[in-house]
Image (cartoon, rainbow, N blue to C red; front, side, top):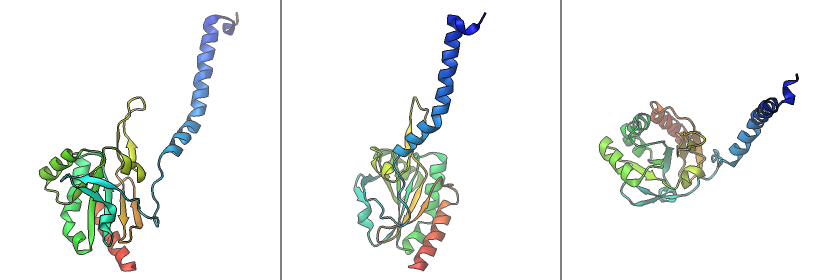
Amino acid sequence: MNIFRTTKGRVILSVALGLAMLVLAMPALHAALADDAAPMPAVGSQAPDFKLNSQEGTPVSLHDYKGKWVILYFYPKDMTSGCTIEAHGFQRDLEQYNTKNAVILGVSVDSVDSHKEFCAKDSLTFKLLSDTSKEVVTKYGSLWNYGKPDSPSMAAARNTFLIDPKGVIVKVYTKVNPTPHSEQVLADLTAAQGMK
């Protein structure tokens, strides 16, 4: 008796063929979804302007810092271990950034109140900007889905942009290691200023 002539056999065959087609289609589906993601601004391009509220509840725009170097860093979540380490590095080196005519702007999708609490708890004195709409995170190609496909959780990816006084992106850091990051940015800032 041929198993594929029975109803049970045909169901098994249909399911197997369906799964095989799904597996074969996954790379194309993944590529299509990746194409929909916002591209990350490239080195040499003008940094996209924005307006976000800081931990003080006051609006901050990138164009407010024309004439200064800007370290625009995106991070996943206030008061988590990696984000705290990264913020502490920038805070530790803040005076060196100040002497180099540079400002630090941190961006996450957390609320202004969360930023306020993070700054108070960890004595952070630079600006943390709230992007609850995820508009700026998306503009900078830094939106990260860390959840499951059926239950997405969106946050900012750990990326940093070094922006010169004319608003041009000089360096992009992706998948940042929070521990040595501030030292790395300071070294690159020093090198970039030497080339100007």
